[in-house]
Length: 77
Image (cartoon, rainbow, N blue to C red; front, top):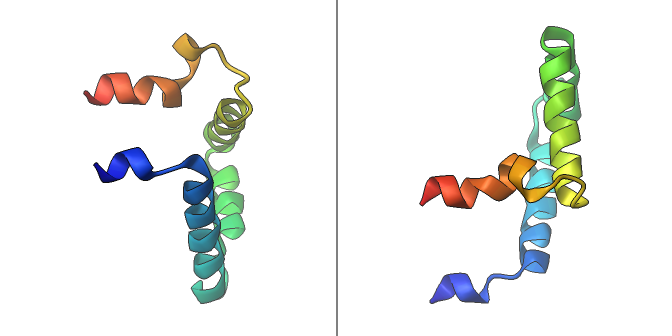
């Protein structure tokens, strides 16, 4: 099955590629970081919490039972 051949390194390359393309083709004032800036103005706690939770997930800084990203596969199935 194709899913068994996907590796995290490949997905990071895809993510970097998508972010790069989006930054290159974004209209004036619509860079991803500028969108975060606007989000911080409107919902500072929510945006900061999302960034912190994502970072903690990526560095395995949360116990699995508290990590919303780690719980997704169980909830999805």
